[in-house]
Length: 268
Image 1 (cartoon, rainbow, N blue to C red):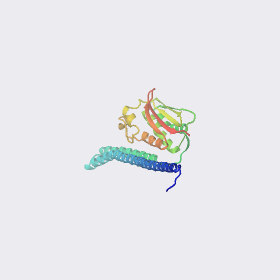
Image 2 (image 1 turned 45 degrees about the vertical axis):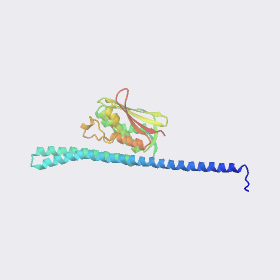
Image 3 (image 1 turned 180 degrees about the vertical axis):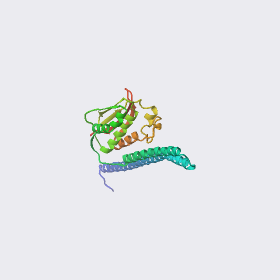
Image 4 (image 1 turned 30 degrees about the vertical axis):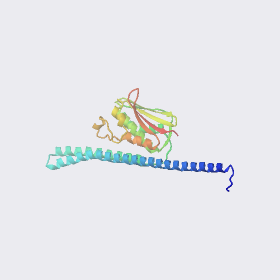
C-alpha cells in the first residue's frame, strides 16, 4: 500500500502550474521572436524597396539630359553646319551637362544623408538656422527677400553637419518660392520632448499635390519642371536627415498664407 499525505496533491498541482507557466513563457518568447523577426524583415524589405525606388528614379532623372545631349550631338554631326548652328548645339549640350552636374552633386548629398551615422551631439537648431540664413543671404537679397529668424535657443541632438544640410534645403526652397520683396519667417516651438523648427515662406503655398508628394525623392511641381536646376531632392533630403535624427518633416499651408515646412527634432 502506498502512503501519501493530504498535501501531496497540492505539490503536484503547484508543479503543474509552474510547468504551465514555463510553457506559456516559452510560447510567448517564441511568438515574440517570430514577431520581432517579422518586423525586422519588414523593415529590411522597406529599406530595400526605398533604395530600389531611389536608384530607379535617379536613373530616370539622369536619362533625360543624357538623351538631349545625345540627340544634339547626333544632329550636329549628321552633316556640316555653320558656326551658329554648332554654337547653338554646344550651348544646349553645356546646359544639359550643367543640369546633370547639379543632379549628381545633389544625389551625393542625398546618399550621404541616408548612409551617414555620425555621433549625435547637442545642437542649437536656431543657431544653425541663423548661420544658414546668413550664408544664403545673397540668394535672398537678389529677390529683395527679408528673412526673420527668431532669437533664443532650441537645443536638440543630432549631427550638426547633417542638420545644417537639412535646414539649408528647407530655407533654399523657401527662398525659391517666396515672391520678390516677400518675407520668410523662421521660429521654433517646444512640444513635449520635441523641438519643431518652422519655416514659413512668402509664396503662394503648397498645392494639394505638393502636400501629398513634396517629400518624395525627385518629385517636382509643375512650376519647378521649367527650372533647369530643380532636382526635386531638397525637401526629400531634409526629411531623410530628420528621420535619421529621430524626427521628421511635415508640410502645410500657413493660416497667414505661404507654405509652412516643419522639421521636428528630439529636444536635448
